[in-house]
Amino acid sequence: MCKINIDLILRSNYIFTGLNEKPEKGYIAVSGNTIIKVGMDDSYKELIGENTKVLDLKDQLITPGFVDVHTFFTGYAIYHIGMDLSEVDSEEMCFGKIKEYARTLKEGQTIYGHGWDVNRFPAKGIEELLNQKYPERPVILFSANRSTCIMNKAAKDAYGFTPSTCYPEAYYKIMREYLNDRTYIEKEFRDYMKLLNSRGVTAVKEMGFDDFYGFDTFLKEKEESKELTLRIFFMSQPVGEGINIEHGKQMREKFTGDFVRFSGYNRMTDGTVASKKGDLLKLYEGTDSCCSIHIDYEGIEKEVLLADQNGFRYSLHAQGDGAVHKVLDIFDKCKKENNKVLNRHAITDMEFTAPEDLERMGELGVIGEIYFQIMSLDSGDEVKAAILETIGKERGQYYWNRRKMIDSGVVLSGATDLPLMITDIPESIYHGCGGYFPEGGEPFNKHNTIAIAEILKAWTLGGQKNLGMEEKYGTLEEGKIADITVLDNNVFQVPMEQMRDVKVSMTIVDGRIVYKKESAN
Image 1 (cartoon, rainbow, N blue to C red):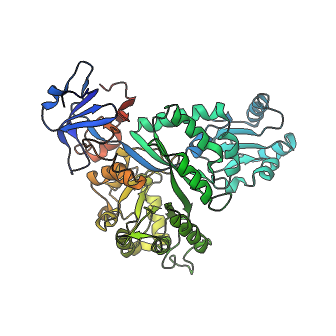
Image 2 (image 1 turned 180 degrees about the horizontal axis):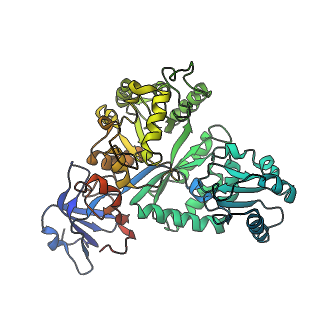
């Protein structure tokens, strides 16, 4: 042991290794990118060498690095595309900015804008004026929350979507442009990694549409130049075309390192229960419908089985109990080992589920990708009213039933659908363990909440199991790679009403400090 050069020793009164239910006092010794020793005493002193850096973190909580298994860099980047319209409050100002920005572009190049405040500057009449002033040049001005946009006829014709269908799966054609604009994408991706590192995230499962439109080349370059501070496991979501197995095979061969890997395929099934697009096992309250949209389960099954036959995993996004049930029917037809799916298929979101299907999910070994922060998006009154209207009080008791998932043996992993939400583990504890909506008050479905240790394991070991990398990451053990996160307070002791004030103070990826809060040691 004494012959090994120890580069870094982290001491703390609270170390959550992920192997137990509570943090313990001790230290972690790192050499290069590897954890050499995890001790619960003062024996670290004998490991200190001439170049060893010792950080005494006192009451800060050390955990394994966090993993977000459902992110969209493509969605994050479009928040910043083109000119900034956040201050626009008049027609004159809007068109003045468009004219000025257009001068910086090549002739005929699409004019993009972001940050349009729908309340500050109503869109009425603007589309027609765009048609008059720019009859042949596409113009698209995205709202601040990307839920809609202002666009002219030339843009609609070129890209095939409208302000009412302004969501990533509809505007995928735009991605070919900005994902291949190196000047733009370099800064966006660097900022994206910094953002996630500042939230303690060391690895993500990144959603890319179709063949990722050449972005894999960018990732390969960053991997080879060792510029990545985030491990990227990317998936292909068929949008513009069906599943492309040959592309998957190429990506599997192209990426074999620990910073970039191809992780399989992803697809939506139903929509939200509140919109009645969620697929239910029984009718919506007061209706004769179980789902307001058509879902091609037959086509989805063919894709999943094809992927499975070729050794790829598939994650399916399902929100209603009917969708979860049908997705499990599909996964049940996949290859198995010891009665569990071989290729680590997953279900994302699972807003409303039937208890018996969660038991079946555990038996099949299907992984859950859970939006623990989903309660942060709307007030409790809005959500509860929507639940009563759509599925009623009796079925509503099974809403966000994470407790049953864990009790049924389902491996949970943490997800955000970023940029829908930005990874924030203390916030996820407030909602997922406390059961609170943003405004506080009485916990919602408290019987469905989980413990702090369970949610931390979901964001760490559960995430790595999702990625198939638990042998190297996910717990703080001797011999594992040093992907480590430090929170500035011990979340096991912080009162729930103060939980959202806890921040990440340090993030270590591959043994290297990639984020450090200014006030951190």
